[in-house]
Image (cartoon, rainbow, N blue to C red; front, side, top):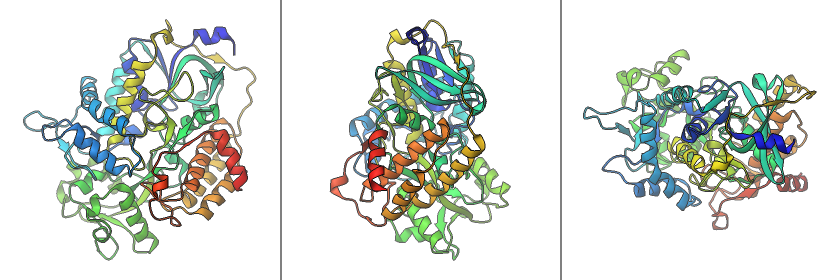
Length: 516
């Protein structure tokens, strides 16, 4: 790629979810190009978030209390300084969202209506329409982006590879028509990866198909440091109704009193943790997993706590249940743990800078350390807006072009075998679900690494495979159980592992070769 091409580049954001759109709006009026794999507002986990955004906005709450809850949930490895920054800046970001038109629920006196979720000591979840926060936030941001002339959005474009010169990221290679059309080069002085998580690497997940680790994989393949890769959060209560992705039964249901029972009607969480259904997510997920493995099944019982109010209070969950032939007003809802959130990702500092010059990351693709080993409920949307805003502040004004980045068509680029890639992805999802899921152990993790070592595909598949290998190797190296990572062969926390992890893909590949 020519130096002239680099000089013409501006700011490119990869990802049309909450972090990407919020960052683009905060960069305004500076020109920015957003590359989205699907139409903005679609294909983003942000739009599916039901609970809301956590922030200490009430007089009864404080940033210090929010920080304490975040640290407690993170199982000993939260970056306290980063988490403090997040909770302190959170209320201001909520007011930004209000200014962009997000219709957060209010009480009769006009104050923000707040709910409580698991492991929060206060009611601090700002929500919309009970369980529609993600969709409402994304609709408001999409509208704001559409009316902002400095933002150019290119949809249905799958980013596949980062361009690097002299150790610095200088552009993006993407494929039109969701990875099936022409390849385009986008020169850039700064690239921000906001592509979301890795949930779709698992056969059972609450995430859309776009959440397959492409952004994290691109960064890893370009040489960026990936942190805490082994920590995957499995949402305890995905609706177990045979859908892919699995619809989510929001944490707020349990916050409002719904209970977990098995097929015999027994509340099994009471014997596992003093907080029962409101225990941290990893504990609830393992409790449900154990009941399912024992053949007793697991069900969310909302009949007494919510009852006839269910359709009004939780319309999204109600619709999903009814579509599956289950009326949650009168019947318990079958649930199972599903891959939901990646605490790990591309290592960043407080301003979203990665270990590669010119590359930034925010949202679920990034790893700031604020979640530690286990994310506190509704801190995900908070992290996305706080650090997306900080990226916008951190990108030097010298990185601003006078016009949106113009793509360059790559002539003669070879086509990928999409049918073969689909088969590889299906196999990979089964491997991850079987061996790198809620419960892990050495033999299964080694088997997974061995199977992955024979898989090869186009750039998008290679990005997903890179992340899957990093998650699996991280899980094998961490010989303990902590937060979202549970080893049945090492079921206790170990002080020697009370630290974050960091891997480069090249080093990981060398270790994997020695293991298998």
